Image (cartoon, rainbow over all chains, first blue to last red; front, side, top):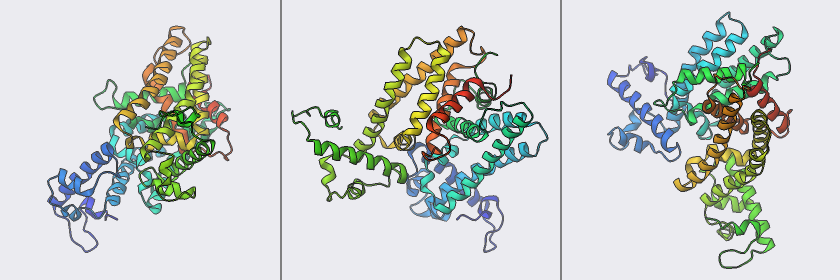
Length: 211
Length: 211
């Protein structure tokens, strides 16, 4: 696994502080890998091709990374790292459950749309990770799912959400909708990431019908 | 490409009628391939492994199929073939647009849940098909999308659906939700395919809130 210190500039296990140049280069390797895995698929992209895209000599990409699977895992982890920021803020707020539900849908849809390549990797390249690493990522997803389920149940108890909806099934439907954005969203399209988030939220919370 | 005649028992291009035994064996090859591609991924499953699972001698699987990509394409095509049945019935009915929207969500969610391995192949193994074959499948998906968009727009004109929803964005959200079912649905779970369809429909059409 790639040591966390290599990412944030902290000393590595042997007490070496990575050079600024190496850190910059490493970030470039991750960016290029994200784009190539997304566009061409993880299985068919080689570390050598990623290195070549950056003008690296054959084999020297291993100065920055340990293996292709490490790259994939780190990209997905980076994505989750970023989701933690907004997720904890919503969890910690004292707003009513329906407001939390709305905010989670809007924010996570927009976040998925803004990070197309990294978010797509989770769904399309899932199987390529080791069992142990799949568990790490699954645990993170489960936290989000459980939070949404509990907000739906609380909102039912408050009388705001219909008593006949199944909180778990509804949470799965909402995440299915939110996470599908990476399949079609284009940054230069007619709708911004936030507008898509607002529209998805309106559909799931308010429904289609005129009341 | 695999000739259609080999599937339904009609004579092939050279006028040969496939034997019953060969047809049965061919259907088994497709079933096993669907399961193995779904469980282990298309890239990492070989035709030899599919043959071995059926007790076929090395290489003799090519008596039933032409290539691994043919298998994948045919499995996705079989799935679409089945969707055409319910889709045309909804398109051809004279029910109001909101009823068509409800029926499409319920039926296609249940259909996806009932055909987990084939439906998952479309999303997870998409890239493995040739450009030309991707186009065939995209065209079919586009027909469904256009129909749903037009029903939402008609329902808006009738005053049944809120004027502020974007028909295209809503259709994408609905298909995203419907198609995500393959990721978690289990045939032996606490909800049937139809119940999941009803729940998804209620969420998208009626929303969460008490009115």
